[in-house]
Image (cartoon, rainbow, N blue to C red; front, side, top):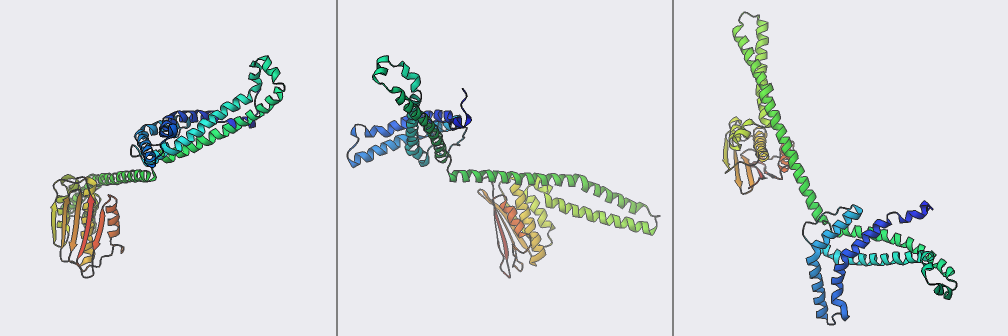
Length: 400
């Protein structure tokens, strides 16, 4: 006989919940024993004895907390597929609170629910096992059929109630376990920050690697072709003397534009990622910037060893952009650049004797520079009172 679906639906998942609760009762038996031992045989009577008993109880549970937590996580994973990640430390007050209060109470409720299943099952099947009683017992209890009917109805109601109660306790236990046995909100936020930091570092490294690839492609491809074209135009200009004046003017113009394009492309390549930075390091790359700047630049670089490539690139562009701003806006007579490493921090300071008044929000490139510094968790600050001097200070974290 097939039971109708509406009658079967309350029992869906009840078997898994019962097994889950039964295992939970077994796991918590040790904890329940620890909680009960101090109070057996009347328990302590003095206040000091009670405090000592509670302290011993908490200490024992605290020592067993890592093992109990692993067993509980395995139970949630095995029966409901709920993966509760381990907390950052072997034990915590949150975990201890679960094993001290929530776990034992839920296990006690689970034990009572299992007893309800057993009692309801016996009552619901009274017509099955009552015939196993001796005949004289059935005769002595005349009217048992009416009582059995009541018992059967009560047993069926108890089975439905036990099924609902089992699923409810399983849900409560799962929520309590996820809230208490897993990482705290602070742990999750810390883990998320670490993941975001690693992801951002990966993006920065990938962008830096892509700039290097573009720089190599431009330097080895387009720039070389432009140089070859400029050489050919120069040869044509020098050797073809019998050309009409209009043709010579076209060649002269093309030769001049080719040289200008080479110069612009060289500046673009250096802006992407200068080859000298990768080949010879920050000192040589900054020396090149200082030489190309159309005002005196004092440069001091004190590095015992090279920072990471990404940090080197950020330091290079800080100096490059800061000196470009000095030339464009500061009306300075000189600038000074100092780069040194103190422990795990790379300090970059650019100073000029210009008119000051630099505004990071005024579109001078300082805002973008600050964002680039922040991409490697660095700090950017600028002091630029009206009348000068302007001091740009950048601190970049790097491995010691």
